[in-house]
Length: 323
Image 1 (tube, helix red, strand yellow):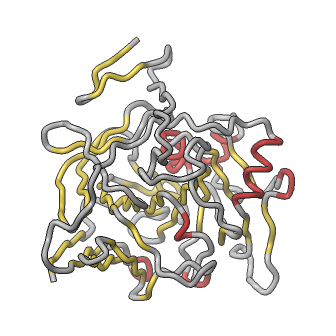
Image 2 (cartoon, rainbow, N blue to C red; image 1 turned 180 degrees about the vertical axis):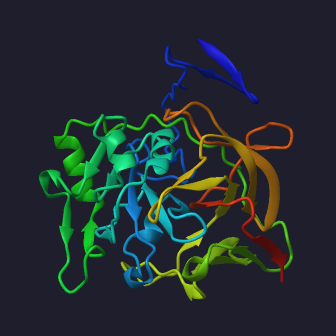
Image 3 (tube, rainbow, N blue to C red; image 1 turned 90 degrees about the vertical axis):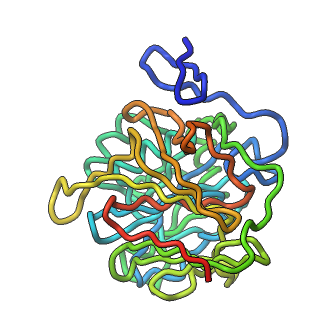
C-alpha cells in the first residue's frame, strides 16, 4: 500500500517499512548525485575510528557520504563511511558496530562492514537484520591487521575485498536505494568564505572551512586538517548536514543510544548558505530513508558532491559564520 509522508507518497510493506525502489538509469550516484561508473552498485558502509592515534584515516576522502555521531554521550565520536563510486585500496582503521548506526545503514541500502561490535549491535546483526561483514569472523579474508599499529586500531580493509566477500556470502550487489534529490546547478550563494563549527567534545571538535571559489567545505578535526592517508589530500564535502538528536547512556562507561529514528531539527550547509529544516525517519530498524525537509515539508535538494552528516546533541554548539 502507499502512504503520504511529508510531500512524498511511499510504498509500505506489511511490516510498515518503506520499500525503496531502485533509482532511474541516469548514470549518477543516488547518494552524491555525481556521475560514476558504479552508480548501480549497492553501497558498502564501513565503521571507522576517530581516536587521535588512528589519524590520518585511510580512504575517508573517497566516501560518497560519511555519518559522524557520538558513541559515548558528550564524548567520543565515530564515523560510518559509505562507499559507492570510488574503490579505495585501503580503508581504516576499522572499528566496531554500534546499534544506532544500523538503521542509518539500512536506510541507505548498504552492506554493513565492522570489526565486532557492542552486544546491542551484535544482537541485531546476528539475527540478520542487515547484510553485514564482521572482521571478527573475517569471511573470505575481507580484513587484515597491520603490523606496527597497536590494537584495536590496526584493522583495515579495502572495497575490493569487501565486494568479494559480499558476493561470496550471497549478498545482493545491485543498489536499491531510492536516492536523494540533487540540484541541477551548483554555485556559491555568498561573496565571501565561511566557517562551520561542530561542537563535539575535546579532540573530536570539527570545523569546515568554506571556500567560495571552489564551492567546497574543507574538513578540520582537533584543529588539524582531516587528511586521507591514501593520497595525502584534505577531506572535502559539497554538503554538510547537521542533524540534532537526543542521546543517553545505556551502559556505562561505553555505550549510548542516539534517537536516529523519528524526527527533529536539521540544517543543511551547501553553496555557502544555511538552510533550516528538519529530518525524519520512520519505523524502528526499518529500511526507510533518512529524509531532510525544508520548512514547507518539501525534500531538500542537495548540491551534487560528497555529503557529511553530523549528528549532534540538542545542546551542542553549531556555528556558521561568514568570514
